[in-house]
Length: 566
Image (cartoon, rainbow, N blue to C red; front, side):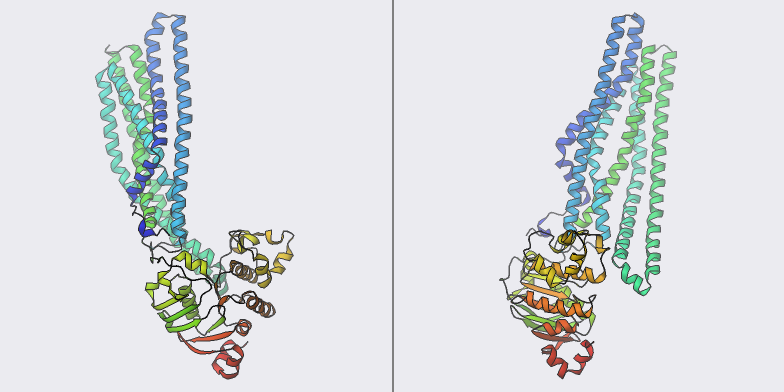
């Protein structure tokens, strides 16, 4: 496995450099074409000036036809170079944005979590908006260079007419960029803060959607909505601040560009009035003064976009450079092995010790829900091995020494709140499309009634989070997915809490039958599942306090009877 430690850290500047280096060919082609476009745009007023200077004086039809032909070539060049130049750059931009979206998503979905201090909603924002804004640098640099080409061509053309006009363009452009570069720093800092607040709002709404049903259940939805309104209002205010800064920047850029164009026009008029330049050169100067507004606008917008791209790249670096919560080992457990918990201390667990031999069906009756959640989290490797005392062993190998892929292949921990994804019943049960036990899993989980309800059967559509299924149907669908995986060790956490008692009895017997000869652990208080197990372990106050069959414990343990009897 390629662990995150093996990857070189990527601060924001490194991400931008990588993006530029990876697209150097597309940027070079785009720069040439966009430079040709800007040069053609600049050549248009120059050609008009020359036409006025020579063709109109000679009044020759041949010269006029030649002039029209030259203008047609310029217009064609401008049109085609813009079309193909932007096609190259936008394709590279889109491809680069996709690369970073996949890279950030890959980091967020890695089996070993990263210690980035970000919620899933924030990672989602980084993988979408920030990835797009970072990739914009692919277009920014060629447009910056092509705009510089246009300004230089205009400055040279005006300088040939009169050196003062050329110097005015060069000095004016330098002053404009100096002013705007200072303002762009404010845009960068404001944009970073806005992106952080939008990401926090996204994380909050993701949490709310996940917990909306229980929030409604105990009436906490109004308080939750107020909490979201607060963070979203903060994001809105920051967005307004950024919009104000951007507006001030755009207004200042427009005013300075207009002032420079006006200065060039007035200076050219005065020089023409004094006879220092010809009428044709005056026409060229006025045309260039109007044209130069566009490249100057692009040129002056570049610092803003560079700062925004850098701010987004730094946000992505929070995910890409975050260290892993744990460093997996290289080992793999033997197939069909046992599960051993050896003196584990974590959260509500204290010196927890038990062993499940290969092929046994064991139920764990947990009196405290917190202890059940802690045990499931440890077995699912959501808690890194260094965060708890003791050891968890699979086939004699400690969890810390095993690669995370090997653990996932060998042991499956199915949570009580397993996610349901948009798609079909079949894609939720068998996401990879490789399971050969789908039908048996559907039968065992009693999902057959859901399949029979719809003409499409297993191909019936399922909405995001199983919105078109009941709570019991979602739980049985999640159980079917766990059973279809057919892993060597299966750990189920409260798999039937939303199922009626009759169905629960059948499901319990079906699980025992389907998993016969495979190691199975069920963390539950369900009498049906406890009775179906080969052995029941009682977990109370963080330790195993009793061990026997369900019926023997009912007969001889009053506390057990009170805890699990319904």
